[in-house]
Amino acid sequence: MFGELYLVPLGLYTTIGNILHALGEFTESKTLRMRIRDQIAKTDGISHPYNIRSISNIAQSHTFLGESIDALQLQAEALKLTESTKCSAVASTQYSIVVIYSNQGRWKEAGELGVQVVETSKRILGQEHLDTLASMNNLASTFSDQGR
Image (cartoon, rainbow, N blue to C red):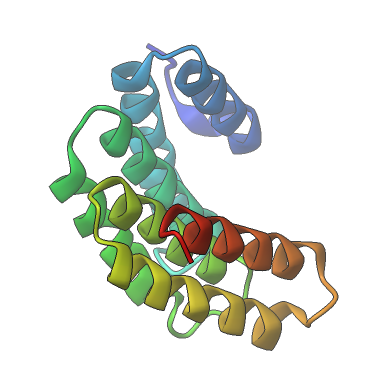
């Protein structure tokens, strides 16, 4: 559908994948996101933050297609890749798992991992970083959903 992905900056394809997702074209979004992941892994390596983010994006598509098991497996893969990486992809990947747990009604796990997301964000990005503040807000929303 899109030919060789390296001919256009991958960020553009990521944007297209996000637009497809926003339009509800989850299958097409997932297909494009998988190609992006493969290209990034080939050119930059599997531990590159962009690859980790692309794996998380694919998991998001799986979630919206009702494929929670596949989504969790991919998020676990992405999370494992973040262990040696100090980037915001760690917190965003963890938060994606929080969302999946919440959607499955696994509130205890969602809350525990939400706390980890905040701690990870503080450690990697600092307490005043916008992404850290967003993770605190997300945790508050998770607690609110739990009636806490």
